[in-house]
Each structure stands twice: as structure tokens, then as C-alpha cells.
Length: 411
Image: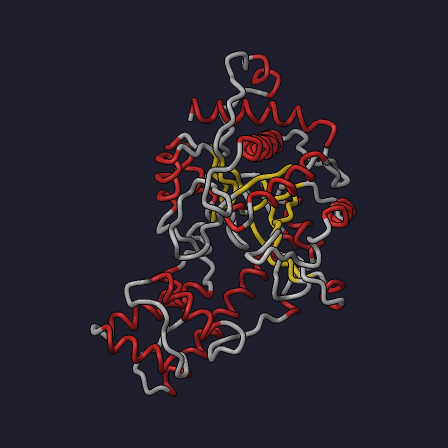
């Protein structure tokens, strides 16, 4: 039976009273990693904890798409490694009003499409009724789309007179835990090509056929590069195995937020910020306007992946929203085949500034305190009307620091 990691924790008053020996040392956090329960660079969850220990990262946040199935295993390794777990989830929502206006939110290619996270969900998970069905329907819809991609890929391989085919169940059993993603298909195809053609020149020749005459850019030993080329040439828009996502299958942002709050979490907007050319999406380019839009939707938490942003822009943006009282955390995602360090680095692959580390740790502390309080039946960071307890943020930071360090010390 699943149990809360806080089952042995004292009550809040005792925690605070007994916290005289708790320091204010800022710990390294990574609040957003994907695991094999959706798609991940990690071959297993334990690998992320191994890396975290070696890199002295003390707080890890699981952040899989559409599923909380990894929470139990994540908790078990967290207790073994004495690394504090944050329970998060990620969705793709659709804001139809913004889609109709052509406004790009945090998907640079699809107006209205909105990546959205929930932070600090209650564990063990307690969802039932219509909310649970809504989540299950999203998972089913995602797998159906991937299944259609596999069927189209099989048809194309048959056109090429190749005796290669896949079944949904086969690929899911070998590569996925619950959700079968587009990246799983790319990995399965790359491995099958390497298996069928032992000679690298024959592999290259087949990739040219597969890519409709385009030369393959990656070496045959570059697994990440090959899988990315498979995705861009076959599985993305215009590709032979591409299946468009049905707008009707997307939840609205309001529905996503309802799931997150019902699961005990904090709604959190993932910020794309600047791209390699210094460009912003329509929704994020004006910080003041973004701030007003988020407040209107009762969103008081942000997350960023600093590795894709220029340090100066990151500092400016984070400082702006930190001063407004937002809970801000950083992560690495690890939702591609490339196994990068689990330490959060900036866009120049350099360590974050002390100020950025402090803000991110304080954000993790608020989420940790929220998780702890909600798990023992007390009020978390959100009020009943969905608004955040902004005036109590320092109190939550203090309690979260105690909770995290108590867990690390006690396990």
C-alpha cells in the first residue's frame, strides 16, 4: 500500500519548534525531470537519483506527461537516497480563444497550445469520479494518436518493400511504462534499422529511402541525432507517419487546472522565454502583460528550463516575477534521448548565479511545505478560491526548508 513520505513527520508546530539546528543553506534543486513513465533520457528512475547524488542535487521533481504512475517508485528511491521528492505533472492544454487569435503561448509553433504543470500534488494520489476519468481519457487519447502513427509508419515501410513492422503493444512493452510517446517510436525504428542492417553504409542508404531522398546528417553511432532526424522527417508535420493531434482531444486550461487542484497541487505555468535567436512568443514577450494574464487565471507559480535561455534574460525575467511573489523553480526536463547533467545549468552551460539558485530553492521550499501540509490534512499554499497565500510566502519558505532538511537527514 502506498504511504505518504510524511507519515513519520511531526506536526508543523513541533517541526518549527525543533528546527533550531536547521540551517538556511541553499540546496541544489531540479524541479522538473521526466521519467520512463512518460519519456525520459533515464533508462530507469534510479538513474536520476544516482546522478543527483553524484552531482549533489538534493531535491528532485518528477514531472511526467499526463500521469502520476511514477510517484510510488520515485518516492521509494527518494527515501533510499535521502533526496527530497517533489510530485509534479505536465499537460498540454488548448486555449481556444488564443488559438483563434493566432497567439503563441509556450508552444512556438502552435497558437493556443499551452504546456502546463501542476506542482506539489498530494501523494498518495487521491482522484476519483469525473476528474479521474478526465485524466484517463487524456492518457487514452495520447496513446491512440501514437498508435495511429505506428500504423502509418508500417504502411510506409511496406511501400518501401521493407520487411519491418511494429505493433503498439510490442513497442509499448519494450520501451514505455504507461504512455507511448512519439520518441519511443523513433527509438524503436532506429534500433530496428541497426539490427536489420549491420553495415553502416547500408544503414545510410536505407535512411535516404526512409527520408524520401534526403541524406542523413547524423553518423550511424549518433543515436540521439538519428532519432531526432526520424522524428523530424517522419513523425512531424509533413512526415509520412505524422498524425495531427485532434483539437477536440485537448483539455482546456481551466480543465487542466481543475485536475491539478483536485489532486492537491499548485497550478504552474512553464515559461519558454527566449529562443536561440532572442525571440519570444506572443504571450510571453511583454512581462507586465504576462503577469496580468497569469494573475487573472489565478496562476502564481512558474518554472523554467534555464539551459535553453540566455543568462541575462533569465535573470531579468526571474527577478521581475520573484519580486511579484511568484513561486519559481528550475529544471532540466530530460525528455529527449540526450543524457545531460542533472544539475541545472544556464544557456551557456554554466552554473546558475547564487541569486537564481536561491530563488529556485525557495520555490522548492514553498512546494515542499505545501505537499507536507496537504498530506496531513492542513491548508496548503492555495486558498479555497484558488488564490495563493502570497502574504505567507516567507512562512512557507521557512517551513519547506525545515521539511526538506528533515527528510534528507531522516530519510
